[in-house]
Amino acid sequence: MKYKFFYAIIISCLLFSAANSYSADLENGKSLFKFCTLCHGKVGQGIKGGDIPKIGGLPQYYLSHQLEQFVTEKRFNPAMVTIGRLDTMSDKDKDDLTAYIASIDIQKEAPTLTIPTYTGNAKKGKKLYKGDCKTCHGRKAEGKVKKKAPPTAWQYSEYLLRQIDFFKNKHRIHDNDEEDETFDDYSKEEIIDILTFISTLDD
Ligand code: HEC
Ligand code: HEC
Image: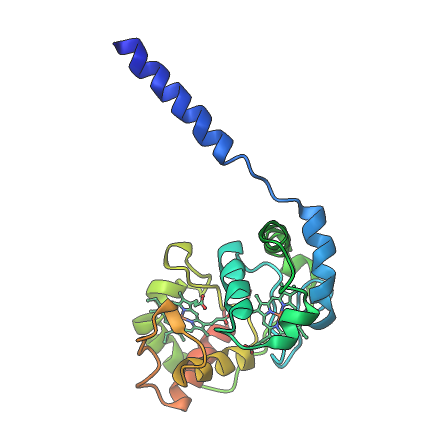
């Protein structure tokens, strides 16, 4: 009786490790990434001024979710989907691609790129950030896997501002919640203060 139990545990462990033995093909990911570099830059550094966001080093869970959002047009950017070939990529290719992008050490690959301090009041922004954003995005805006919230600390302020406008206008869904009201009561000035605080956290 005792032994049966013991074997059952061993077998479950073996099955569990087999199911989790998938490892991404980073070479394949790297070669697919060339369709992205056209806009996002050689190491996914984006463009200063935020027309194109930094993506190198974003966590894989967040990247995968965004690619799905773009393909299903919950986020709208058809040029990215076709030029990036996301419309014809297999799920395995997308997994390899996002694993590769997540593995990029952006600070090492683009050491001179920093986020310029934005134009608002960082002190006021810090207070608002601590009250309303920290629980999900982290104390240093490093993101939280558990909340599925991305890091924002090293992202261009102008890009983040555009996303918050999208959230406010319901062109994009914040916190995966269609009813989200996070930004409803903030003035533009307060949002800029929050983004200014975030822009001081990029080291
Ligand atoms: C034609 C130019 C273009 C190409 C090619 C392109 N992108 Fe983008 N990408 C953009 C733009 C512009 C945005 C910002 C859209 C917005 O403001 O909502 C973006 C946004 C993103 C985001 C969201 C970042 C965030 O922080 O939320 C991810 C992830 C992304 N792209 C990944 C990729 C990947 C992976 C590829 C290659 C398969 C790719 N992109 C190819 C232009 C492009
Ligand atoms: C309850 C959790 C939660 C709280 C609180 C929260 N967020 Fe988020 N936020 C998220 C999640 C989850 C996402 C990712 C949504 C997605 O996958 O598209 C996100 C995405 C974002 C993005 C887009 C980042 C990008 O790279 O495109 C910005 C900007 C943002 N949040 C700003 C804020 C600010 C500013 C606050 C405080 C006023 C805040 N969030 C509060 C959960 C939260």
